[in-house]
Image (cartoon, rainbow, N blue to C red):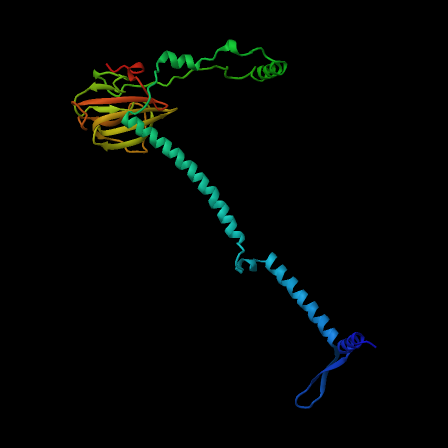
Length: 289
């Protein structure tokens, strides 16, 4: 018999050699528990228990909140907060960009550093009119059926259909003598109206006050946003009766005329109109005298 076979038989004998594990009562030496074991059984049982512990620990970490306490794992709540903050940051960046553009447009209105554009009543009306010849206005079969159905439904209506065209009317903030008119070449984007001191300045139309502050060059200044990109500006006032954020109606007093600011030459109102960031000649729409 070779040495290799002897070693194999010896190892097998050690693995399969039976041992008896006995648990005795220490006081009476009474046998309480006994079990027969071999080295092989102990090795198999320990291996199974180790594998079971590894699998259980893995499942416990992967599918329970305990993984949050292990370095390298991020919690679900943390991920949700991070995603929510990311969306909120993106929204705030868009709002900040819009506010910056709006503030820059207000700054351009106050400083007059803009490119001029010509506006008048005729051009605005012509731009609003549609060239009907450019469209095919022949009704289709479906359109004809719909018109017939609507006509039947409105046959006994108490109110006849009618259309009305509403124009935005601007009122003069004050009436007086024009000392200097609108001149885009000299960057005088306003009408200067000479009025007695402490004359009430009225809103040329309903809107929201977006700026009401003191400036060194133009004194007390008030800006009204009338919507649709239309702004009106009132400069060189002695005082203001409205604050930023106030809603005003057409003809409501918003300031008191005066002679404030470094660029003033006497009691008057410096009145400007702006449309979509471009200065507009106020005398085109308003009669000041």
